[in-house]
Image (cartoon, rainbow, N blue to C red; front, side, top):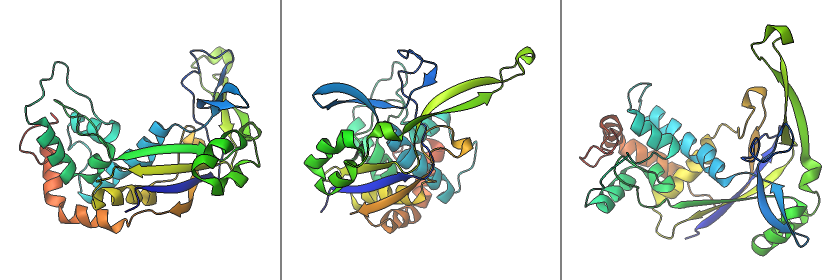
Length: 282
């Protein structure tokens, strides 16, 4: 069984994705694009790229759980805040929590009933679920990453060598209200974007023992994703499409799992037990 598959994301609108250094160690007023450290031409540099953590959240966690709540017909206000935190941000342990002695058993029972949590992991009130099955790696298909990409996916090297990522990087200027009538209630702000046409190779790696329904959930997420990533979505920024999907599992396995376990999944979310008989999210 193949434990790795790849997709290519292609931007059809410029992508805005803010770096954590902006406002902390940034000598300009421009919101910098996300950057990672790489060795290029013998020097350590910070090069624009996409955050894998953000990709996991946007492409998989948010998409799968939006879809799950629709499928289970769970509406706004029906779930506890702790359950929502688990679904949409991975949750957090309560302060001073004392983990139960059977936390591993409970964790696996949760993951058996909810393939999305098996795929992505998370924390309930008292303990952290067993580790997630999915690892996400992303490389922009640009010259700066070509030598690294060649080690794993030589078929993408020729494309990567065609353009530098800095040829794709530019700045956009927008206005926003300030509440100050004397200044016309407008303030300029700038942020970096990567141009439409930028492409990103995304590798999905599954744990060796990942169940079929969990693998399938990853495909279901990609097929259900709304196609937007990063900031400035209200202006259409970050619109992407999926290209060159290689080796993705069958999405129907996950949807059939949800249909067959809908009653238990819904009850476990509504009462916070997640199907274990113990209140885990309260």
